[in-house]
Length: 372
Image (cartoon, rainbow, N blue to C red; front, side, top):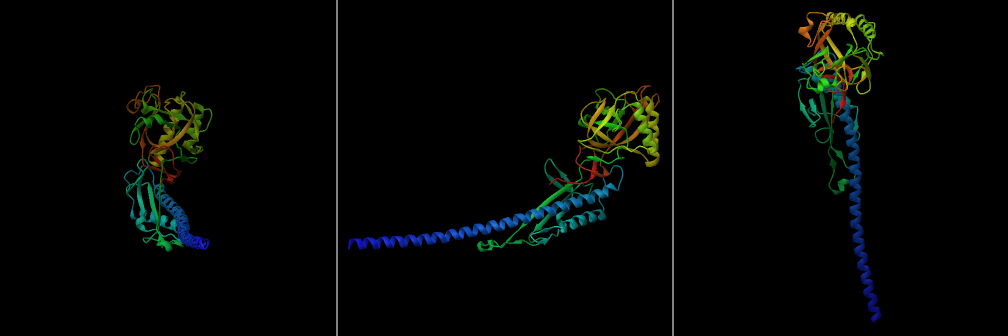
């Protein structure tokens, strides 16, 4: 009798445990289903987010490139230039069209006009400030939410109350300091030392190419013969003559890659030719806006190959042959045996079709890069 009772008690306990296991399994299945649903829908949302990012990147680059085309069609310093209504329309249109070439979760992307901003980006603080006064950046937000293109519907997460997901992406593209010069764009046989700019000189400052004065950063520059080795007075005369009559095309260059050959020898025989080049540029273009390389370091009497780290624009204001009585008034340290050449650094200059990403010396490219 006692054995029968024990068996009955054991069976009751087994049945109780089976019931508890069934409840536990049911709960675990619900949790696993919820987690699976969440994983699937989160993964779907992340894929859509990447697709939106591609759309934002493309739209921002297209808008900034349209801005570059506007600036590239102008000459000289654009300081203070304000975008016209037509300018803004062309930028917004370019960004909108580029975004529409992309899809996110099967939907072609439309960008709200309010999600396209034109302005300036500050890398140090990672901030964007809208402006139409000489902007250099375009920022675009793309969406899959109630404001544009609709939220992304979930597959399984609706079981736990999530029927849709909102996703956005942002990108900013900017016209950066010039990093590439095409053949023929460098139109002066001079270069400026990095030391000049590091010493606080820049926009609107005077640069004295010759004579160079030891210890004076405002005269830290040198003669360069582009890629013609070795640089010499004879080579320089040939280059200057060719630039004057159009038979010599200076090579292109890339910041951080190209080296140019400099010389600090006696250039007395070159000065009369340089005066002729200056006069020719003024006659043909109204001014000699010289696009010159900036070389690394603080050597104010450079000789031999120098690494180019960027480009600057200088309006040449005076060139005088050795012995010219006007030299003393235009160049510090000038004497009867020394020629004189000086100019003013120009800023907010945009070099058409130039790539961007070089040192910040006031001259910009018109092909943008992503900064955000």
